[in-house]
Image (cartoon, rainbow, N blue to C red):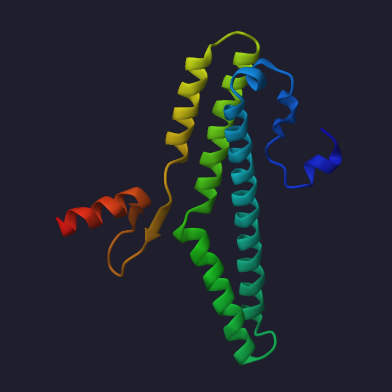
Length: 164
């Protein structure tokens, strides 16, 4: 790993290191999933950092009154929207879960390439990774109540139960 890789928003290595390996020959779909999870992690990670910087920057501008009262309100609104996205969708946890799923599957791939485990164990690692990633969680804070978390898959089943 060189210095460019350290500063290029690459929290996960590229799967090209697995070219000409047993996993590439016998289970190429697993490498596609590994690449997808890596890309998702990078995207969530970068978006999380971006929103954090945006929230901090515009909060500081609003707090100092930079540009006058009207512009400060716009800065405060941008900061509030950034913070809302950070907290409502829990991007930090989702990014960490995706990376942990990637680590789990990547470890299984390495073990498969060394002949330590078989295809069934790699598939089990994939299933465990999917469970770790989970669905999209939306945190909604209601006035006077505790935060409510609703999984995207649960929303559909709740809607179906109400119509039945």
